[in-house]
Image 1: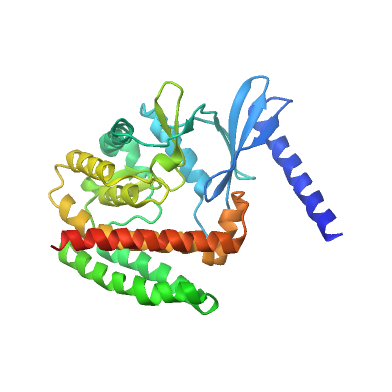
Image 2: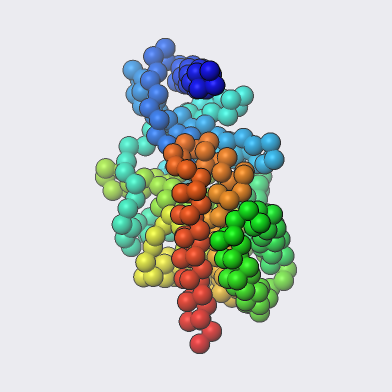
Length: 344
């Protein structure tokens, strides 16, 4: 009986989403094709007589006040209004059910990135940098997890570490990694940040309207070779150094050292008027790397697992935890090696 009830609930939910798709497209016939999604949303292709669309259902959690749908739709509208075409257009919005209808982007994942692809990413960032002076940009929010000062970054690290410590008693292998390796690197990273980063908050003139979760993991390559960047749920003002570090560190990017340095040099050129960019980059990258190690371990937290389940990930929690712990170990190894090279 319990299984039958679950099937009925899933069927009812799918029918409801199909009705939403019909309403948003204005088409009486709309077929939904599940496409998976990111870590915080579900994506479906909508087939109609008028063409294809993308239907995105955004995650809502009681403990998380962030309105991902509002942030993304306003960001995409802002960007298209100012001539940024490397992002999808918003077609219609259903706020009540957290669904957004977007133009369908025909393309493939950006695998095996090249310098040409990195140039495309840098070209978009240059456009964003130029939009700092647009009057409407003043009304943009801060990016999710923005890091405008060492204090803000330290607060994020502390919060993530506290949440991890709450589950360590249930996971001996995780506890060993955190206590024996992550905490030691945290102490080293704090020293690096204090030595290199100015203590004051970054002035507004040096901030950037940032996609936040930016990279080829959130992009599609069109048949003509052009790249479209997706997922602007965390868009807002941030330090360009934060964007640089996230691009270099994101586990979904899989960039080699040559492409990492190529991107970093591109960001140095874009931010050439920022006299302290290089110092902040040196000071923040280890600490942000520590953040990414802990983000990878979100599957050990209940809310992190709920996000992955909502997005349609089909794997056991044990498999997901083992994979993410291995990824965190690999990133920490890379960070230690890089830290060692810079201190020689």
